[in-house]
Image (cartoon, rainbow, N blue to C red):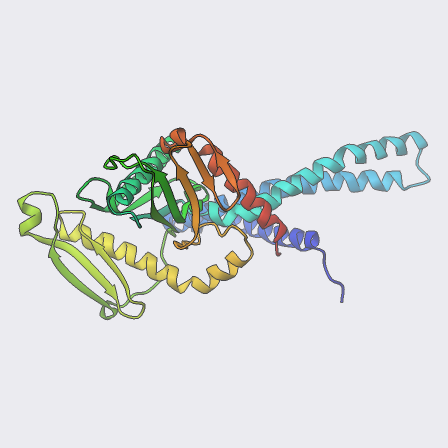
Length: 366
């Protein structure tokens, strides 16, 4: 039995994708399909996800066909010598072009999973460091919101627990936009800050921390949670908000019995809105838990583990006295902390994306 090379397996995979793409286009042109707006939208979305692979694959096929034709002429001793020389020159010019297209295809293939998610749930929690940690969590929130706004992503704060001295004990927000997970998926993990707190009279540098988890949010969470598997508690929402918050029972707490996952939502004055948000996050967290084995196997192929949601991994240090940000996963030091905290994360994110793409290409398994 002949063993196929990685590139041969890749080309077979691309051919399957191209055939599915053509099948979708045929279905979209079918008058029967056109009668169902829902089905048409589903097909259009799938077509869009495949097009970024099919377009360069078709280009690759065209160039490869030209090289094969030229090679046939160059190897044909019956042909005129000048024509054979011209064919060899064409091969010399087209071969690097074909290789470049293949590299683009590989890059698109290994990042397609992350690009497919246009919505993420981000959780920021204050860690060790007391009030300073809560302030840092607030700084991270501002940084992410500024960067999201810069990239044109929509944002919605789903829940927030403010600290008495400012900042946040916990914030849950939703970020939406094309490929948003491929940008913010690198933020999962522990973030450490080193700076002199405003309350520090001696001018000593303190170290505190916050954790971030980024969960990709599928358009439809494929998880069925039975009502009898969830315990719901309703209570008054504490904290600021006036008499309505104190007198009306609007805070929702959901506990999923099989997994022990608990979600509390108290941000809205409306019990109905809090319940809807709580169920949305509960479904997402249960879905993520049940996908743990699949995620572990996927992450095994990556050294960076983008979006793994591992809070215990310290990924970054923000050193204010040195105006330095260090990303420990790739050993990157950037002396532009002031700009980064204002939402200028481009260089940092692009460095992570480049490193991650290279690691995935090394581990590409078709």
